[in-house]
Length: 255
Length: 231
Image (cartoon, rainbow over all chains, first blue to last red; front, side, top):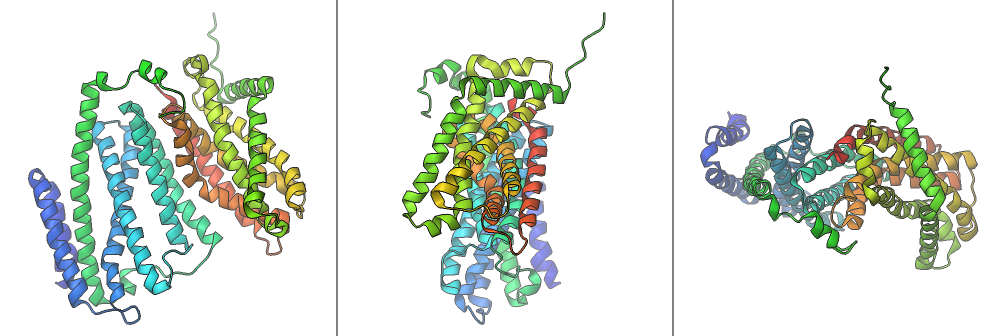
């Protein structure tokens, strides 16, 4: 019963909101996210016990871990959209790829920042060259490159194909970076799974994770609508795009 | 009347590679620029760190690969800039040959150029940084070839993309540098082991990493490149 109410029910509501209540999801999803965020962080800050060694500092976990998880989910969505676009082009896929990459980048940056804040009191430093941190940093830079590419290409079709290619290549690189950095500097760090986390801390972590997921879905939905509207405007008004003559007149090397 | 058989993938790649090398040989502009660029990078490292020969010698493998990496962004960008002249790339696309041949020829051409650059830089490093090659020349060459292949394959795909985008000089490093981290790590570590000796027998695993990286990115580039240059 406990598992049902904390693990299955929030997910069920989430799925219902995006499927059955699709029409109102842009209103209900942020509200749902805020409610879950309130419950999860209330339990995390006030009800759950402090960590035996780290004390109250450990409570940052309820924001740090969900942020990173959600970033992974968003970037995986980006990878799936990139692959799909190459097989079956469509503006919706491209817009979802753009939205998920941007939201994933935001949540990843939040996760890394919170991790650095957490690292200072517990490890004594903001940053260490541990495989996970290094991989996360490279991931952020790689997807910044992806976002830059999207800004630097005017032709919407070329932009979609090229960013799909870059999205696939960047996603394939992540496991290789992970292993190479691990070999380069093997610092042992135990992976946190639900089994290594105390049940009293599992509950706020789980609810916060759903809250962040709902928040990310809400962000992606809004960003997706903007991206799709931009694509439609670009395709409907190609004369609004810079022409070849305009780019020929531009001084070489200057954006 | 028999229809002429379409030219095979490897034949087409060889023809294109020959064309690129011929252009390179007749102008020699790219290799000259690369060599002087990479040499000045090596000099700059020693200026930035002071004349501490011990320090330079210890980090020589890493500096060599940084110099090659910086030079490679010039080389990769240039390899597609020559195709932009007189819309040469459009001509290649219209030729009845496999578009993947363009990828193979460009990637192989860039690898050759970078290996040549690396083998010119190593004697200079021996003189400037006082390094000794402990493990023999064949290991130097193996590391160079594997590392340059790893730079060239994803670099070729990204250079093709960047050459058509705005701000291409910024875009190529922005896309390529994070991607190349595993290959750079493995190549720099491998080169350090080659220069300083390998008592723990680690060289094989770094070669393995480079080999795997090459396999993945030559494969991905081969598959994805036709989509990059289609119009």
